[in-house]
Image (tube, rainbow over all chains, first blue to last red; front, side, top):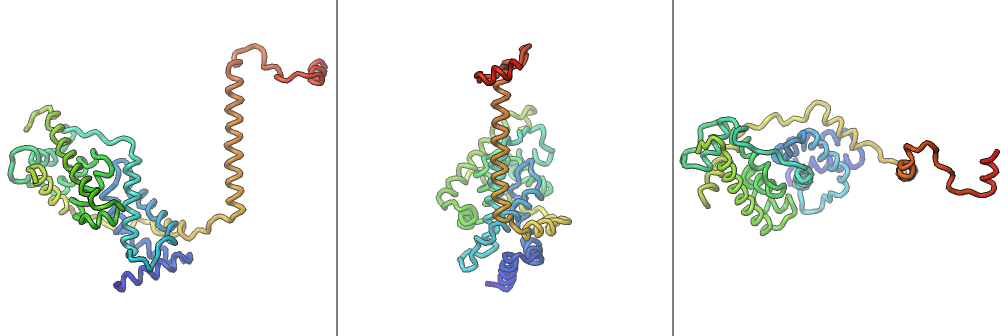
Length: 200
Length: 96
């Protein structure tokens, strides 16, 4: 265990006893980690600050459930809580936004053309446009599939890490990832057929 | 791995290059969370009172809905509803 982990655990212990200063330090220390997870798995119509707040409220209400002696480091416990809260928020999303080719900016449609048609070289655009397109495509998937692909491809987590974060077993994650990629391909192909301008 | 998957991964690799935005908590966020975290929980009496109050409220709403449903068919009638239970005392009171 590193010194940072030790500091964090001391703050956890003090926060459990109701020390406001320790609670503030804990929020400051964990905010970057929590907000990264929230931004990666944010439902389309949700505000990231609201979801982050929900995670912290849950975290403090369940702080007594964390066992220091368990093999799970505190930061992993927090990540797991954050991922599961985001998954609940994604599941609660009643309608997924409709995606239309005509709504895509030029840079994003160039990426989609690259994925579906012949261009061998990826388009020379800003990384943000690639990210926005991926997020739009992922928003069309069911929550569990979206979570798996985000964790695997955007956050480069291993299957084992995903199993720790979600509580799902490894074969389930692999099957889910395989099916999710197939759904993405079908989605993109459908999208191509619906393109009114037949740019491809 | 098929062509789509290869290109998807190329797109994902480019997407991962996006710059991290400011990751400090927004103004007031930490204080708000810390205040909620250290807020003392409700005492047992308050907790019981809250539960009883909620049930009373639910009961009152249910009675209101039943009354409304019974009254609704007679809403346009010229005469109001007559008492359902009639006995001698009620007859006497009614005739006074």
